[in-house]
Length: 137
Image (cartoon, rainbow, N blue to C red; front, side):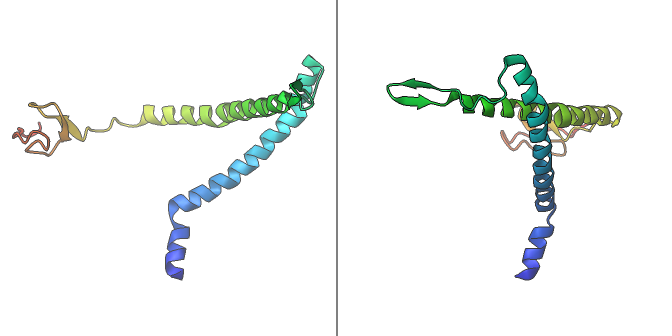
């Protein structure tokens, strides 16, 4: 049983997930500090309020705290923008560079001439319509 536990823990995707969680937590702390120390004071300089959590309105003795929602929305949008510009865009650029330098992949499937289904290149008979297919060139 311990051997199986060790195999499970040492599986690549489990280790990758653990690293992603740790890095994600650290990144969230950096983004939260950026929002608290830079973005929120900028909002305060523009709108005159740094904290919107006290904003509310009342209808029929029911209080709606929409200020807390505005704070959460600003935080979410800031985190999403930070992840997009500092993680997603650079990764996309790196993948595009890598794809431009890589040789094109050879196809692994072809179309059946009878039913136009995708079949493996090495197939001699279509799995969908069962017609014989000439050898691939």
